Length: 401
Image 1 (tube, rainbow, N blue to C red):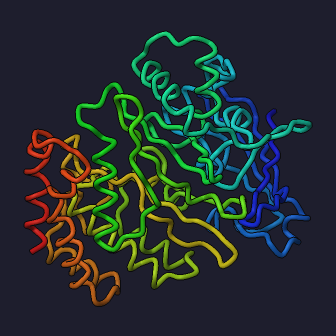
Image 2 (tube, one colour):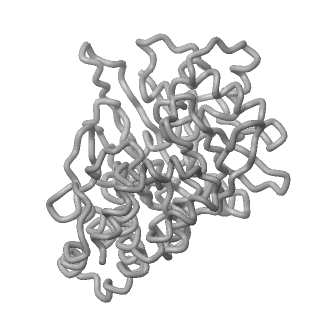
Image 3 (tube, helix red, strand yellow):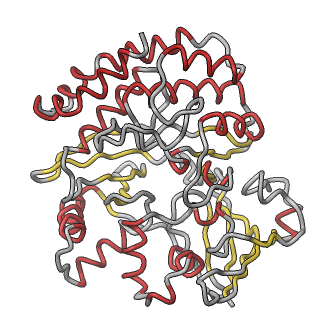
């Protein structure tokens, strides 16, 4: 039996003990029976809110989970994907039989993104780890070799454990704290990259901002012979507190392969956002941008709700890239197709969703993305790379005229 206390850090930096996760050992198929219950004192606290407004409404009942991992999806949101999980397993020296989500949450403690911390009775989740800019070059070099499958010394692994085991996503990244106290996610190049992903992502974020989309602060910094993208964390407040994060994958209860689309995201925003009119228009603009630039990796974990004193709202856009892998199909469908829609399809979808005055929005996004070549050159991307990805973007932009 695994028991984990769940603590929630509020935007003002105060912390609340909000509930307990209880999980059995995996059965012969690897499935874990588990449950979560809010604490009564949390339910009675005026600052309390539902950690998942769909699946975990504020109630004294016990929420049994039917997920094979044993925990509700909102808690699994705290864990990183492939890159960070491999490091966590190595850090805790977990054998295969112990590499379960409850055990990984125990290893994560208070070092995940978002506002939740997990620890067993009698243990302290500790303060969030990371590194400073001065140590970024050493960290990048170790991460590069580890990602390439090279042997990394024990003291170098400790450096990765400290800074690089908790950020989400499948690519190498780390948590960075700058001299002014601000906190950033450092996104590293990978030894497996066919294209210069770091400047491409930076250029795409800049294009999105020009298209009227809210994105986090970001900057590209040279580190030795390579470049690193720094993205300011939007889950951290100026007071040193946290904003709770809930992915749309958890909110929609999606597991494994799913066939969901942008209409499902709009429906969720109307149900759960405290500012649905603002957020649905922001999401529509981001959807048009994804179609125009070819951001086909638009899976549900790349869309997040944040929570502050007013309630849930759409996070800034993140993980934006053109279709560098030539997938062509989007993860999410638009109307009934996973292929990029043309202008008429986008306007038809807006009418169906009840979102008015979208023609100008489509034009603004198209005009911003049409200048992508100049933007990519501004970020130092070579003509050869631009030529490789030009056909896909040009076709998509032309479809929006």
